Image (cartoon, rainbow, N blue to C red; front, side, top):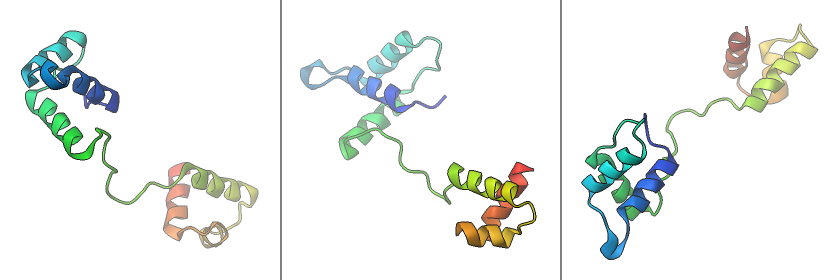
Length: 112
């Protein structure tokens, strides 16, 4: 299971600062002791988290690439528009809500 931001921060805190720093293997062992129900983290994972923090100053996930998902509010608007006027076309809904015809069509297919 991938580590969430809270887990990565916990790993950073386990590493420590200054003369109170732990080795990456010690951090792996400590994390596993604190979370025995989870899959153990590897030394390379601890290293990547530490490097990311040094380079970027945070351990948040980077924004995902690719086309963004259709907003849930827009999906609701499309569905409500179709419920209010069941005889409206994809083109009409698209024009009324200022979104692409293929997006409207995909929402209709998903809702069916």
